[in-house]
Length: 470
Image (tube, rainbow, N blue to C red):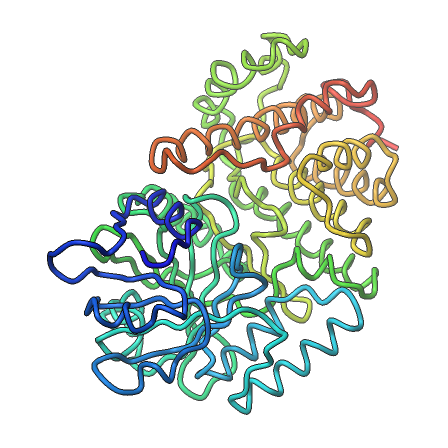
């Protein structure tokens, strides 16, 4: 590490990487991170790779390094994308499909950037650059390692960064030569030894594809898995399009957005119908709710018999993280991604509550600035209590789904309460995993932590929730 760059140091140390200031003797480092002004000193270390803040590709045109400039979007401090400027097709796709263009001036800027980048030019006002130089030519190491799964050596790509915490996965979107659409997604862990999510993701995709073509048509296909030096990775068929979260936040025809939401809601109902098993199959899930969830909320007045009040119901498969961030949409079609939280035999209606809660909150506020996580509980409670623009639409879907799953009306409020009690604990469980694998990484506020309290505090909600009946 040269020239300070304390944010880099903190992030690398958090990921378990040994960092030094470059002083002393010893073998060349694996990586040097440096500001542009110290490029000469960085080269002198003979590191295998150099990451340099700024556009200094020319500094590496002679010698043993191959250099590439990466455009970071939207900021260097918290990027969501890394775009290789020597690959205009993939960069143009990323700028169009992975940007929230919610103002006319942003539309004009995005179009101008795409034109300039297609000509190999860089608009200096767009985003910061880093230069990555390596002693070995070719694609990134993880992309090269996927050759055994059929990835050609001449693929183009862009990189998406996980926006959760250090346990969220990054992904390369991979394009065949000459194509303007991604064909594969290569997910990889941000810390070594974190294979659990990949195991669970594979199991979840097996559940989705076992449910039949109607469900499988909207789930990715797993190509294969591998690891590089303990860093787990998986390769899936790509879902081309935009994240539904971005679609709903971008100004546009409300009716078009609503039709897409309702198509996904219908698919969720069908997922439940096609994965129904006997009520006895739900035994383990009832035990989990009884022992691990309900006692955690006794301070809110949640009584211990809450799970027993749910009548015998057919167990169904849950995606169990079906927010708009896990849906990719394109021209009215959609793919549901990231199945690592799947439950194979659980309560019905949960995925519908979770998805519509997130989607309708975004739909009703899509023309407003992005809301902070701490505002999410209030907005979800308003929606389910009947005070939001989309509340009647939510209630219509609840009635339809409850009938399809043969859930008695008097049980719907209890099922919804268990849904939010459980999901409000999931962020805490995630932060515990984070503390175990990356103890220096601070906990993150997700927003869902506060839904259970807001739900139980509202007199129209809780286990007696009935306003949805109309």
